[in-house]
Amino acid sequence: MMAYETLMNQLQASSVSFIGNLLSGVFAFCILVVVMLIGIWVANLLGTVLKEFFKRVRLEKFLEGHGVHDAFLGFTLSGIAIIMLKLYVVVAFLGIAADIIQMPMLYMLAAQAIVYLPSLAQGLVILLVALMAADYLNDKIKESKKLPFANGIGVIVTLFIAYNALVIALPMLLPAADPSLLVWSFLVLLSAFAIALGFGAAIAIGLGMKDTVSEIAKKNKDKFSRLL
Image (cartoon, rainbow, N blue to C red):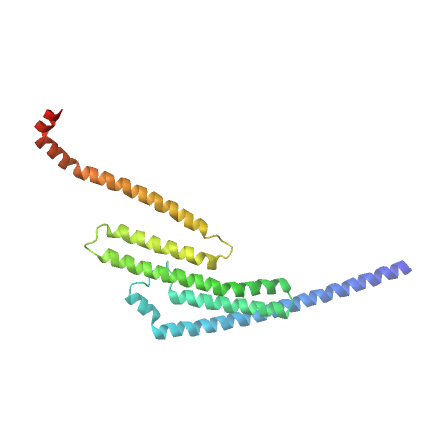
């Protein structure tokens, strides 16, 4: 009889504990959802304000006037800025929600993301400025009618600027990454390009001077015969 009562008491205590944990989990989840909904609303509100600001200052019109509006691989500069702002606000509210419901792991992830996002923004600024500069120079080079191989030179200049910007921005975009790998790969590619350019120039000079050498040889055939 006592064993039965002990078992029932343990089952009752377990049931109460289970129901309490379940209600606590549901309550915490509801708080998380409410705080995140508020965060998304605030992020959208601030994004709308920033979008309206960019419209008033005519940022995209300014970039389009200088021919660099298409330098961002299908994105717009204002769109990238709005996305970064929304992401920062949502992550901040995620940290607030994690702190309220006492979830240390989620709070730590949110805190690390908050610390990382400014570094990400700096890396993106470097890349975006480099892409604008590369696109501007590429357009100017292609517009030059006197410059031979303008399209090829424009592509090389674009790749050179973009690559160097990536090397500079990589520690900010990926703090754990080693930019020296990109530097060494760039040196290998540069050496290969220099060798190929040297061979190409030698072949071009050889083909270009073939007729000249042949003509000189015909004119001085008798002199060469006497020497031999």
